[in-house]
Each structure stands twice: as C-alpha cells, then as structure tokens.
Amino acid sequence: MKNSSVSVPPIRTGSGRPSVQGRLLRGYLHKTSNSLCGIKGYASLIADEEIVHRSPEYWARKIIGEVERMEEIFRSVGDLTGTRRIPDLEVSLRAVVHEVALQCQRNFPELEIFFGPIPEGNLLLPAVDLAVLLQEIFKNSAEAARPGQTRIQVVLKGEETPAGRIALKISDDGKGIPENLVDQAADPFITTKAGHLGIGLSRVETLLDMYHLDWSLTSEPGQGTTVILETAELKDRNRL
Image (cartoon, rainbow, N blue to C red; front, side, top):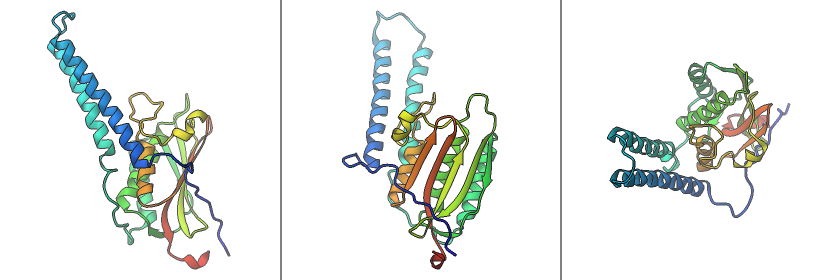
C-alpha cells in the first residue's frame, strides 16, 4: 500500500534574488560595519577633551560590548562558510532526532515535544549538521510563546516525499510569525526578538542549500509555525 507523501517546496522560488551565502555575507558585513563604527565613535568621544567627562570604565565597557557583538556574529556565521561534507550514511535518522529533542527539552523546559512516526532512511547530510538544524528549530519554538503561554507543544514526525525522501515536519503552537515577516524569516539578522541576532533560520536555509535539500515554512499568527525539512532518503524505495 502506498504511504501518504508530502511535498516540500523551497521557501523561495523568486528569480534575481542573491544567493543564500551572498545574503548571509552582506548581512554579516553590515552588522560588523555597524560595530566598527560604534567603536570608532566611542574612541572619538574619548579623544574629545570638550566632551562631558565619563570614567574610563564606562567607555571600556562600551567598546568591549561592541567587540563581543562582533565575536558573536562571527561565531554565528563561521560554520556556514565551509565546504559541503559527506553525509553520514550509517547514522540513524530517528536516533539523531530523539537525541537532539531530549537535549533541547533539557535546555528549554517550556517545550513539550511529541513524536509521530519517523521512517528510517539514509541521511542526506552529516548528523552534526542535522543536529544544528533541529536545535535552531526547537530554539525558535521555545522562544515563540504567546502572552501567558507557559508550555509550548511541538509535534515532530517524518513523512515520505514523492521523490522517495524523508521530510521532518515540525509544528509548534506558539505565537507564530507576523504575516509581513514570513517571507523574510530566513533573511540574515531579521528578528523581532530583543537581543537576538536573527541568524537562526538563515543557518537552516544555508545548511540545507549546501546539501541541495528543500525546506518550507508556514506560520499563522496566534496559532503556530510549521517547518518541513528534507533530511534523508528512504532505505526501502520499493514502498513508494
């Protein structure tokens, strides 16, 4: 009997748009440029004898804060500029998914993760990169609580695609993404969260693009968000 399948369209299909890596680099350069301008501005104030006096510790904290911001940005994009690695063919998809989910539940106690069936298959990307993808998605869900919501439910299951691949479907019941930002959700440094870099979904898109895998994101404000990620190829293609 043929199992149900799911289509995983790319999140973007428009032409003339810069590449994922191009947008990531442009955003990185913009952010680091802002920090460098900030450091230069603080140094200028220190050198200006006419400026109202402040303690050296004040300006030191300002400059250190900008340097730390630059370091955080660099760490966020540093692992996305490498070359494509060989997928881990002998690693269990289910094992990776469950291990990362348990870790995220420890890190984010507000998450309640429920599992549906996950077909077993050969990974189409390294297990370490799959773990990064899942961590980013779970982290986004953990930070998506509606006002007054103390527990966020996440449902994760695997579905077969018409191409004989396995797509992980991850749905939460959080506040969702504002309609005007859905199309920009994966753009680098776009965020509505104070103190966040807005790099999470950019990491997801960049890693999947590196391995030529599709993904999609849908969101309903006030209802939640669903992400679908191509991750593996069915071991038993004859079932399709």
